[in-house]
Amino acid sequence: MKLLLVGVGRLKSGPERELVARYAERCAAGGRKIGLTAFDLREIEESRARRPEDRKAEEAAGLREFLPSGAKIICLDERGKTMDSEAFAARIGAWRDASAPACGVVIGGPDGLDPAFRDRADLVLAFGAMTWPHQLVRALAAEQLFRAMTILAGHPYHRV
Image 1 (cartoon, helix red, strand yellow):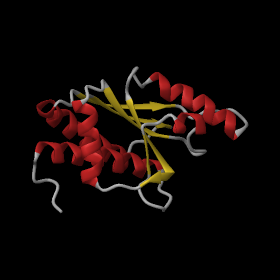
Image 2 (cartoon, one colour; image 1 turned 90 degrees about the horizontal axis):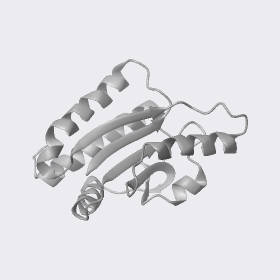
Image 3 (spheres, one colour; image 1 turned 180 degrees about the horizontal axis):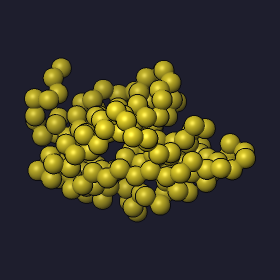
Image 4 (cartoon, helix red, strand yellow; image 1 turned 90 degrees about the vertical axis):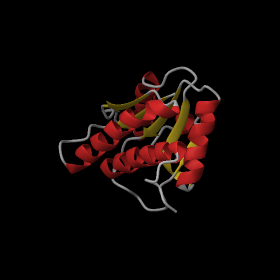
């Protein structure tokens, strides 16, 4: 199963981009042993539409282009559920074991995700009740995907 981290907006050069890249490299290196065939980062431009609803709809269309047919979709959203790392890893492992072709973690733009897109997600997840900057959310998502891989592999990176 391929892992995708898809976000609206471009990360600028700096420590956040470097951190995301570091976790992406770790995921790519360790995933094959446990049936995770690739880890791709994708970014789309923010919509320039005038109305927030139109921006979200345009961004959702762009996000869909990066998600292959049959992909499991995890939307990061403040209204999502919280889960611990073990449960997150178990969900990804179950999708992998059910032969899902891909799992995409999706991060919306400043206006959030289109409600219709979010409602079709397989999982809507929040990193707590606080609001996080998009650049940090990408780093958190990349780290949690790496952590999920280590949990699935039985590696000691993750300790309770």
